[in-house]
Length: 97
Image 1 (cartoon, rainbow, N blue to C red):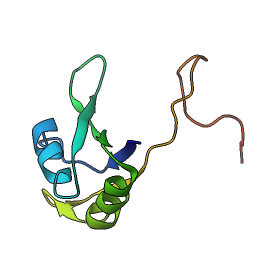
Image 2 (cartoon, rainbow, N blue to C red):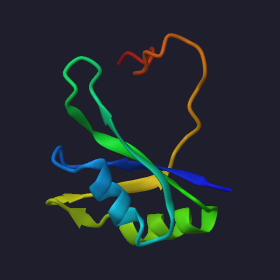
Image 3 (cartoon, rainbow, N blue to C red):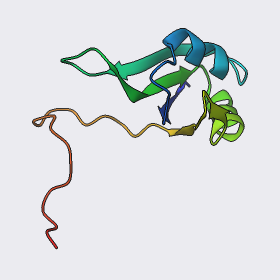
């Protein structure tokens, strides 16, 4: 069973190929995707990597979370399941102080 990882705090210069190569240190990478802004096409500083197995995903988290790449410490953890439906907006609701 594969494992999808969230990768945050990426440099805007990091490519999907570099991301895939980096994560391949921990095991077989099924896919690597850097999220870009819908309007400008510019990278948003985070992405997702899918590892072939859960064990290689766990290994990638332990190896790469906090590792400095292009001067930035990566944040790597298991991706939360994407919610289907809704407005797709996001952000926080309520909670005024």
